[in-house]
Image (cartoon, rainbow, N blue to C red):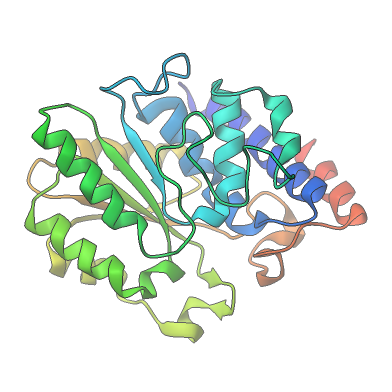
Length: 269
């Protein structure tokens, strides 16, 4: 798929994220928007998945470690055809399959996530199982940068390298903001690349909003057969809506009606 088509899909995802969280009156739009381009590429070019057969044994698996960014994942899954786009309007509603964090009741969701720090461990288990079953499946795990402050992430990182799970590719959505402030202020995670390299990972750093760079990174990850790969995707929180970009305010709140109009005016241009 060419970059122009990927950009069109990502644009629709961002529009859905804004509308979904507005209708719900809650949610996490900022981190959803920063992860949109990586998620779009994963599902529309990189991963082997089939909406008509979500449980196909040879499929690739995806773990949304930063489960609060579920609105972006839901929008991508709907656009891919896992469930009707109309269902996106039910985000966070009573009885909806689209809860605040992913649950396995929804087609396309492999793992229920929410508590930060656990996703990479789960992805490691899935990758090891695929290897034991002699499947060609690859496993992808999208983490937050604030999530790197969790101790379990580093236990998993050590184990991933020890077991040489080259069929696992982790991505850090590095937008530099978390709920309490910047990652530098809350607990500095740098030098993130050198830390993962020291643990034995193949580390790549990219612009997480450039489909050209995203494509090159995933291609290089596939070529690496000796160890797991970490892609550090430098992103912008709230990407795509000018007044939301790099704003901590929209980490965990939906837009007001006036803000919704402003955001949609920008996204519809």
